[in-house]
Length: 149
Image (cartoon, rainbow, N blue to C red; front, side, top):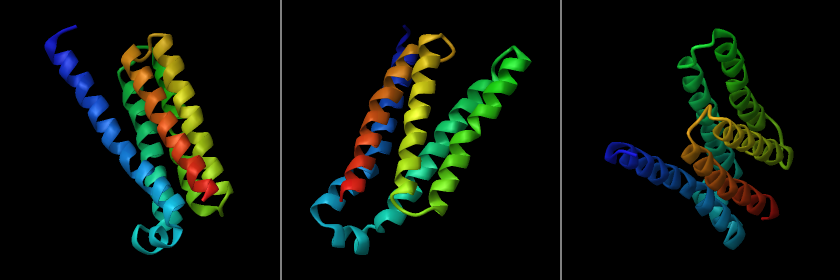
């Protein structure tokens, strides 16, 4: 592995970790002080909104990957599948709790499974599969905490 590749992977882990911070902060705040979270942090709407944005982003990552595939049929299949996270995220914004949180969690579970499986099969780099599994576990745990709050 080159120094540039190592730096790129470290940057991806750093940015993914930063992206997980709002999930963790909102989840912990929801447990410690639901009133503070609702008044000062936007409550469920902010949590769901951020989750929807991130889940949509993950679908976009897969869309971008599909564009580099040489097999047009495989690329089209991957592009079609990559739209599902955005649609699930949008629907989660329209439905009531607890279904909204359950749908968001299901989206992250399925996206993590797709990404880790794709990394195992060589469609994505192995490090990306580990990254997605780690960050998705943090996000899913945060969603569970918010549901319990």
